[in-house]
Amino acid sequence: MAGWWDSVVVPRLIRCACSAPGIMDVRAQVVPKAQGAVFELGCGGGLNQRFYRAGAITSFAGLDPSPLGLEQAREEAARKGWQADLRQGEGEAIPFADASFDTVVCTYTLCSVHDPARVLAELRRVLRPGGRLLFAEHGAAPDPGVARWQRRIEPVWKRIAGGCHLTRPVTAGIAAAGFAVQPSGQRYIDKTPRFAGWMEWGEAIRTA
Ligand SMILES: C[S@@+](CC[C@H](N)C(=O)[O-])C[C@H]1O[C@@H](n2cnc3c(N)ncnc32)[C@H](O)[C@@H]1O
Image 1 (tube, rainbow, N blue to C red):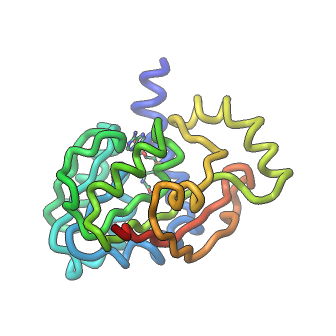
Image 2 (tube, rainbow, N blue to C red; image 1 turned 45 degrees about the horizontal axis):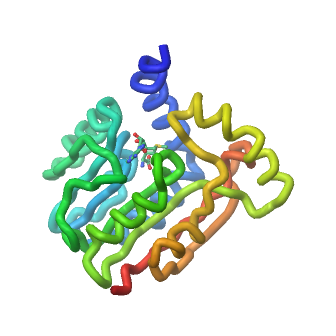
């Protein structure tokens, strides 16, 4: 039952939730900044692909553990008509060489990985020095009342929502991994419960 829920139901629910207008608006601000050799972590669902400027990109690779999410991403790539190297795997062990990419894109994925610090170290490793991590993530809310609810709900939420955590710091977590963060925005998503709706987005430079 858990296998069926996680592999069949969760990717469809997530794709639906992650297509909400407030989330698509943020993708439209973040993703078009990608250029050069691009790697997207958590590429499942393929919802970012329509926002890439194909003319600014020399190659596109992605990684996601979900077979169904990858299938959806490959369908998006076919619709877009571009070559995409989309692989199954996890961000804790990215199967690409050091300094392979000019841009790394990570949207609504750090909430779900097993070990965010290790994943961020991997993202830093595969970026070239001076390269940019473009991020948009939901996470720990700044309001104490909302944060309290996030802590209460998280144990159940992560079991039904594909391992999604509610209490992870976004910008602070990325800065702690050694990136120079340039925040672009933060707010609650419209029409989403506040415990799941605090978003932060921007870019983070690999400085050395
Ligand atoms: C909420 S969905 C977001 C999908 C996509 N990034 C987006 O913006 O629509 C979370 C994604 O993270 C993926 N994921 C979960 N654990 C992961 C891990 N350890 N490494 C990489 N991706 C992971 C899931 O398969 C899923 O595709």
